[in-house]
Amino acid sequence: MERDGRRRNPYQLTDETPVYVISVAAQLSGLHPQTLRQYDRLGLVSPDRTAGRGRRYSARDIELLRTVQQLSQEEGINLAGIKRIIELENQVAALQSRVAELSAALDGAAAAMQQREAAVHASYRRDLVPYQDVQQAGALVVWRPKRTSEQ
Image 1 (tube, rainbow, N blue to C red):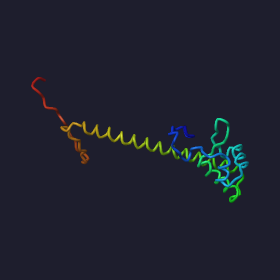
Image 2 (image 1 turned 180 degrees about the vertical axis):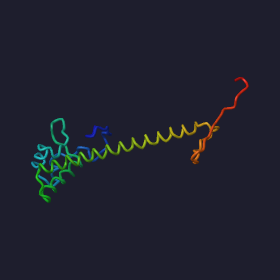
Image 3 (image 1 turned 90 degrees about the vertical axis):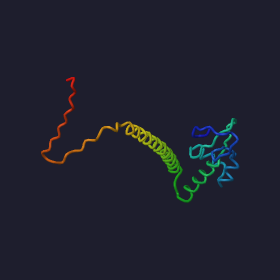
Image 4 (image 1 turned 90 degrees about the horizontal axis):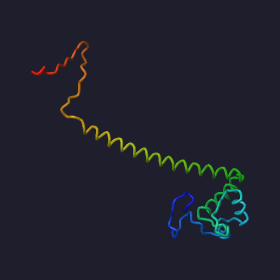
C-alpha cells in the first residue's frame, strides 16, 4: 500500500516507490547521509523502512530533500520552520483533495436533482391549465362545477 492508503501494483514504479538506499539518496539530493538521518529524526523527510530497518527513499523523498535544502540554504529558514511549511503544504494538498471530492459529490447531487425534477415535470397532467392571475383590482373569478343530475 502507498502512503495515502491506495493499493498499487508491486511491480510498477511510481514517484512514491521506495527504491533508493541512503547513500544513493544522499548523492541524488546533494546532501550528506548524516544530514538525511538528521532530517528523518526531525520528521522532515520520512523514508520507508525495510524489514532490517534500513531507509529506502522514493523519488518524491529526494525532491523533498532538495526542497528542504533550498529552503534552508537559500531562504535561510530554520528546520522547525521548514517542518511547519511541509506540514502546511501537506494540509493544503489534503484540503484541495477534499474540496475536489466534495465538488464532485455536489455535481452528482445536482445532476440527480435535475433528473428528479425532469421526472416530476414529465408526470404533470396535461389537461390542467395553469391559473393566470388577473391584474384588475376588483376582478373576481368564480368557478362552479357542472351539476350532474344525481345531485
